[in-house]
Length: 198
Image 1 (tube, helix red, strand yellow):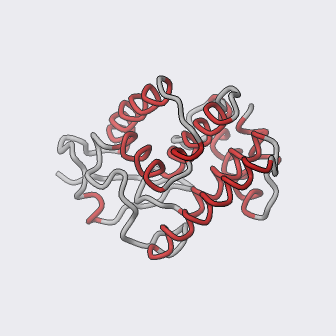
Image 2 (spheres, rainbow, N blue to C red):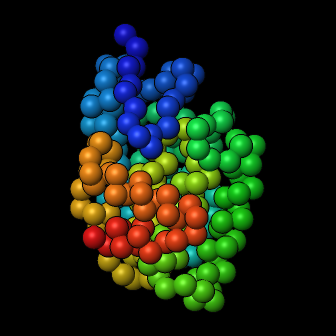
């Protein structure tokens, strides 16, 4: 029995080798995969709630990888590891580490110099990290959790609501989110910030 996934707009397809990294052999459908991933993600969120994070620890490659690993470690063998294939989105796989390093240097500068408002710093980070597309899967959810960690632990503000809906299912809500991401792609972050707080 293989993993038969149906992809919706904005989702990155997995190649066959990546699918082989599935740790739960009974999963056969997108709904089952989403359910197991969500359980794992909730564990990762609980982990963030009981910890304090300093920028020096948070803005590192190890932390970015660790958050992804905590979100998907019980589902995917490659959780927390940079992708080894090119995707329909993101930088070339060889550039992932370099682009992430540049982003981490940028966000340290933004925080140290109050370059933007707190929400905008977190949202700019979210947008850039998902644009890099560090991992084979889960980049959108990972980037949103990273933004939540930044806004809560660095700026002591409430986490984002992300429109208070399920962004993993095809809906008008998801379309609004993807439209806001496309505006951010051309340097306009207002819609994404508003969506994150709606």
